[in-house]
Image (cartoon, rainbow, N blue to C red; front, side, top):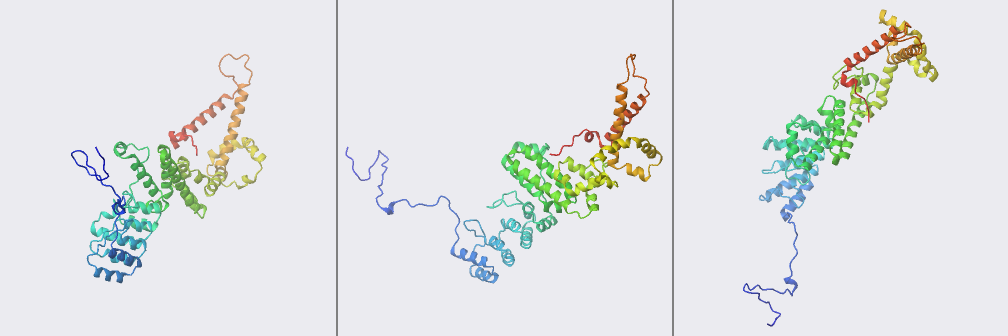
Length: 436
């Protein structure tokens, strides 16, 4: 069977094979992705819109009545978005007045660029079309996820004016449930939701609600909100190790925000008002409940701030200002000298509880010195009792006359423990405060 260089035939199907010998017969390359391209009239329309000349654009639209005003280029950019990004408010107002205009993700771009005036016009247009459109995100956006709403984006960017305007218009952010929550909704989400999408959404929500601008406007007690958010974010960092770094950074930023707030205090009275707020503490037996809450939430920077430490030191020393300048040896001898005055202090506290000296002895520093002195006396009595001659003793303690004193001390100390447990609660009393 002879072979020829012409187009052969194969079997019954007679498949012809053609030899490409000329450049005109070669396959022409084509793009793998077809992107939208603007026509000449649309390209000219985009150029006119970018100039910001409303009259010129109006004349051009009158000359081209069939022009698609919602046309997009290969990047998905519309003429309205060009006007928004150019901060051309008159052009935005003109384009919004055109029939059939589509806003798309221009609202989110206006929020991102911090343009309250343009944003208000866009939201009013959405509200006139459908009142619910301004509260949700954009499903088909090249720059933003579908769960990003205007208020979430404004809170993430920290635009205070826009946050205020959106909240006044009724926008809200659904704060994520605490990481340890196991309610019915959380169980359903854990079982059925996409893990990556759910965790990304949760992280973005935390970024929004933990922004200082949003905290200041959405709550009446920003320090309390910062404490709780920081505690939740620290828990999330341990439960979601994939985003641990992001959660730890957010927790540190929220803690720093609370510290910045107390750094703005200009007087001792302002600082005391902050530390004496009882919100968040179920018991009000503490002098500074907010300080106790800071220790519960492990806010080390808040506790260690100079303003906080100054108030604590002033409450600790009271009116005994000379104690600070005393030497170490003198301070060491104070409990020993206090042993002599303990009976006098006891009698005066019972007879004249409002005497100035009694108030002076009631400051925390004096209470500590008196407690040390009483404990030293107790140890001395125990030492004497335990080292007495027990040669002829068979049962019962030696009849030294010190037993009633020991019993009184033990009963008083036990009652003090019970009293503190009742005032602060068993859980808090047995809790070990540990600031990381």
